[in-house]
Image (cartoon, rainbow, N blue to C red):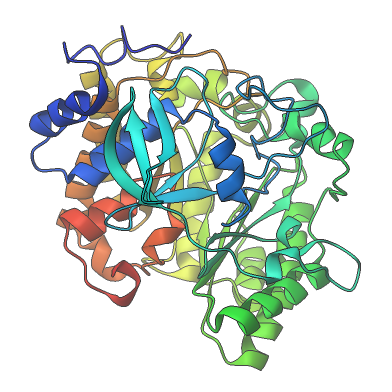
Length: 441
């Protein structure tokens, strides 16, 4: 059971709004909405029938990481065979987006008040008014091939699309998947529920879906690609080149300056990276996920065994030659280093490690991005206890300070802030750094 007894050890008040108030007192320089978001990301949200109701009104969480089906043990009182529609996120009162992930032991629950407004409750006490974005109509249309569009792209806001380009990871075949990932655990369950999921997105389906979203919304600010991994990185890159090439053709035809981003195992080969750039990719993120070299065998065993940390760093530096400063990033999953057997015993040591990571990358003009670890059903570490909310806030604060000092916030493209429901990186830039660009307002 993921209780709070050992993981929020800084506080003697562990209930309701008082817990949030105390967190805010310990972090007076961090806005309350970021504090709440970080705590919700850590603890998850309890499933209630209201979540299903809201899922039918908002953007559905439809990636194969979708936690909203009856096989998820965190769901209760769901009929056999029933498909649960889950909103990808909810928004706090200042617009801060928070991804929805279930945990039956979570202190958080979304409720509806008598006046119809939604409230986020912690231990039965209201801590914040929340809302969900209304869904678009294109989500439930089909492409020429008969593919449901929301199974090609999901909306993480009206202005942002996310796709899982490769719906499997070859590291899983040998039991070497990243310990925090539940990607392949979901595939067969989706098929059992009647969803026709291909193992990879087809370029034609991606182009049709992107066009439909543009036509309805008027302007899609960003399209991002992520996914599993192939041991043959050349084959993986060829697939991304085909997808972005098809998307870029539509972008040019419609005259819309959508930003195309890709998170992939980019081979450190200038010719392949140049192909990606010419296909229309604007920014690239070969995601290391784990920083400390000693932790790679335990936390990212497949990457360690089949690719290697040095390969990833070389990929980042080669990408920089093609895409330029401000357009190359690497995402790191913050948290597993505190649960690993070879990891850190003290939170201050973990914070110091991430500080060194952020400084090292920024000295080389590479953007360090973070994803706060959320314990996922189906992942190898589904039973692990994440570090305290204080730890996540401390790492995020350190990153923001280093990003500001480096000037990288000025040099990088700012995606629409509501597209970042799983991380507080953009929230710090917007609410602490005070960015007032169009995509931060």
